[in-house]
Image (cartoon, rainbow, N blue to C red):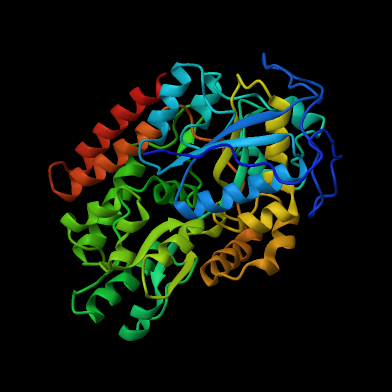
Length: 443
């Protein structure tokens, strides 16, 4: 169920006072209002009087705690701006947003991910931020170019990354020490990775499999394709053909045959991508594939020490990827205030210190450097170190996925599951997937 908070109390005094935009790190931020270049049919917020902004995101109680703390920090510097916040778990989040969109009452500031960015942009639910980027009222100059690109749809800036993440192999360090099996390393070939996973299964006498079965994981498939010069999407169409997908499925069939992965009934527990169901946490495998920013949450779910390294294949297949975005509702009555809050969440050093790495590496390179010394959580430090280790190896960012991506992801999971339980062969499952994906993208 969504958690609705009463308005966050203002901190500080002198509610009529406006403060100028300070320096990047730690300075008070500009009070919202009066920014030029309003577009996309939005109404400019007034200079005077209180402003209450509604904010909606998904996440854990920990995410809620730090997000509310940083919004209070904003109100401390801008006393006339207060917040009404709502948050919930990931399940049902977009259903609730769809209901709000149908009624025209989407919150002023929302968290979305790349599965929905293009759709929300094309349906004109979220505000086009391009003019504000052009005049630097929304200042993205400190963000990696690839991270900026990954928030653009058809050349328009539609959202700003709330953090940067990468896909990684999360592994059980304690288990590998006990089994006397070396840790996996980034840049392994897929054959080397599966050979490593077989060693784990053999060393544990079959009690623990080496790796999760990621045959239905679109992230792993996307990186596998990019490591061979391919792409998951080309424009608004699937970017690969039947031969590539059959090869992918057969790669995992060989891994299953070699007992590198757990049995089929256990594999599907991880297909939901819920951290608590990841087999590296439940003890079914020595390794899972996960977002790097999820490492602290995964670590909280187990007493074993978890490590993090890159997926098999060339590191350049990865790119500066938004873990999620902040976007403004196109119908907000206070667009300038919302833009100012996004600026604060993205580019303010004090805000970055409070937020830490809960949503991933800070989008701003300068804020990353500023907040680095304040990170005390060991898992957050390991996630940050992993991001730094591949920062100079990243490839160019593709465009965000097209509308229909969420359905394509589900179709891939279904195809992989049907192969695992032998309801379909690889060719039949591939044909079924491609047919469904083409239909899902034809919107």
